[in-house]
Length: 305
Image (tube, rainbow, N blue to C red; front, side):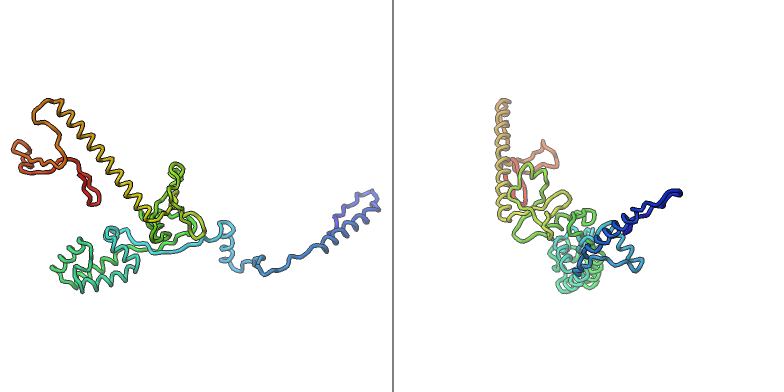
């Protein structure tokens, strides 16, 4: 590239050396251009073609301004619906085979097996009452239509980002376990604060397809063998029962001490499994009723006196 020639002011003679300098600079630029190596075409498509249409231009502008499309996967989400939300067996079947297929299966099962088509006792009572009043065919058809009224929608989930609780609803943790969980493992969602205070406690952080921790909001999904989790639960339950027994014994000792201090004949604490019967001097609603005294801990059909 030749250097720019400055105009010679009027009244001044041109510098005789200027043309020589211009030629030297031009020769230098020519040598640099000749020595410049062309980048070989490796077939990588490094040169992007110009957009041919307005739509291609907008797509290209979108990518450059806001980034590439995020990888997603889709699934059908059902509810909210009281029938779907409160019947776990029905929910599992619908999520497995789909709403329409499940509705047809239920129709055939009611026609064939009547109320025993369901294991849920509430549904059994309702179906039996309906059959007695309207007949099995009408009840089966009505229940099929009821199932088809359960809301359903297809939702796109971003693969590498957090779950959106507003999209997946209150079952967001179950959704994460259903997608990334595996048989024989128990799962807990851990926060950074709990990990900092208590450590991992044997849990391993679950990773997604990209090797990143599975997170629901700020909680990380941890897994531990199911046998270890069950052993811990039994140990914690036993410790809780022992703590309750100690409190009961302390209360019993304190009640006996107060009874002795009162110096009233026949006054004392009610012992464990001792029976009490209400008499006429008591509340009229409780007259004649007998119950066991003491403390009772009820948890999952387990009673400890």
